[in-house]
Image 1 (tube, rainbow, N blue to C red):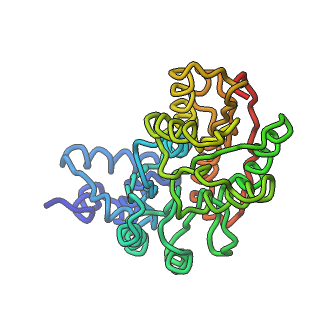
Image 2: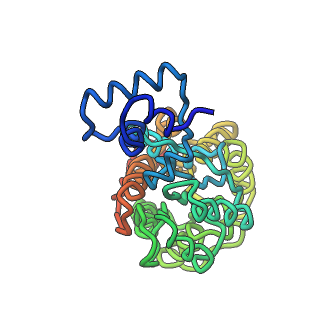
Length: 315
C-alpha cells in the first residue's frame, strides 16, 4: 500500500514536504508541490484523514449535543451553528442526546479521544461537575449561561426576558396569567417560575403546564387552561409553535384574541409571524453562530446576545 514515504522517494522530496503538501501548507516551493501532486495523482493515493488530523492536531470537526431534532428552537440554534461552520470550513456532527445523561457523557468522551476539536452543548442533562472535567481535552461551549470558568458560553438573559414579558402582560392589565414550559427539570423552567413569582406572586393551581413542545401540545394546554374555574386572561407559551396551538384552540372556541385571551410566544418563528403572535425572540440563530465562533477560537468568554420583544396583535 502506497504511503507518504513512497511519494517522497518518487517525487525526490522529504517526507515532511509531502506532509506539508497534504496539509495544504502555504510555504512549499511551487515546483516541489507540483511534483508531489503529480505523484499522488499517478499513484491514485488517498491520504488517511485520521493520520493527517493527528499530524496537524485538529479534525475541523465539531460535535453538537442536541437533545431533539424535531424542536424548532434547537433547529434555530443548529441553523446558526451550520451557517458559521460552512463559512469557516468546519464539519458539524450532530449528537442527539434526548437528555440521556449516560449518552451525553459518552459524547463528551469523544473529545477526550480527539474525535472532535470541541463540543457545543445546546442543552444539557448532566450537572456541570460531570461536564467540566472534559474541558481539559478541548473547548466545551454552552448555549446557556454558566459561571463555570472552564466553559465558554453564548447565551441570552432568559430570566430578564421572562420578567420583561410578564411585566408587559401585567402592564396591559392582566393578573390571571398562565404559562407553559418544555421540561419541568430545566434551568429555563426554574427561571420562569421565579420570574412569575416576582411579578405575580404564587402560581394559581393549573396555571403552569409542562411537557409542551408542539402545536398539538399547545392546543391541549389551552383546552386545560380554558376549563379552569377562573380561566386565564393571558398565556405565555414557551415557543411560537406551542403559542400557535393555543391560538388555534382559542379560535375553535370563538374566543377573541387578545380581548378574551392574550397570547405571547417565544423565538419569533414562522408560525408566530404568520398568526400575528407577540413573541420574545432570544436570538437563537445568533447564539448558535457565536457558540461556533467560541469553539473555533478555543475561547472561554461569556457572550451575552440581547433578546428582543416583538409585539403583534395577539397581546
